[in-house]
Image (cartoon, rainbow, N blue to C red; front, side):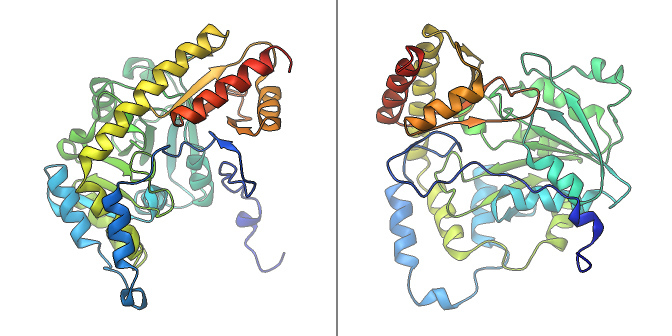
Length: 357
């Protein structure tokens, strides 16, 4: 392949969860919200499908950034919006890490995009294992680890953690941020399903960014809208290297309308957490080991069969869940919390698999 850089030829791409074309499946594999967007969001998007489609969108998403700034009690210069938070995570590697020489570090298991971004940038990777219960090592423990680099240019922390669902206290995140000398991105993709968040740290410390998305909690996976909150110096650096018109117009309208109907989503957050607790109890009663979750999914260790066998058996019953081949989690399944009908059907299938049906 003489036209392609050798480095690119060696790269392994990010592998997303299955998005099946087959109908009639119970889809619990990619942590999509089981509830539709607010009716006000759908109305706003439909109203925008007109002659404006021939025009470019607002290149800076100014109205959305202003609304987010009011929502988080900060300034517009503290906010940048991206084509999903994934775009902004990629921008962070380009803005804060010297290509081919810098270091990117993160805990494992974690978001599987991080190593891909690191490898694309030809950076040194530091992967620090979480404890067996997926809690984070303390700063003191990390100081005793020769591998961990407190001067790394960029550290990603998924909080709550994915794929485990483990939530982290703001106090322990703050201790870590204080100790790190480089940029820290607190990736809060699932924080709306948790009991606390760390957004205040992005406004308190000059090296901290908080990442959020409209995909999981706000049912806008299809639109791809995410954002970072941080000090203007960091946000400005990201803005200088982002693509022009990076957030589509309908996505901006949908996200803006979502923020205007937050009470609708707050109710959905409560329903997801209630269902999460109920399903966790049911699975524990069936012999599953269920880890504590502050997200819209559960990580479980199944009984009787190994996790990959469970994956195949559930798929045969038209139920999709997620299995990861990584050594830390290959014995587990990740199950998205669906609506009441989906989870009832899922539990019926689980009981059939347990008895060998």
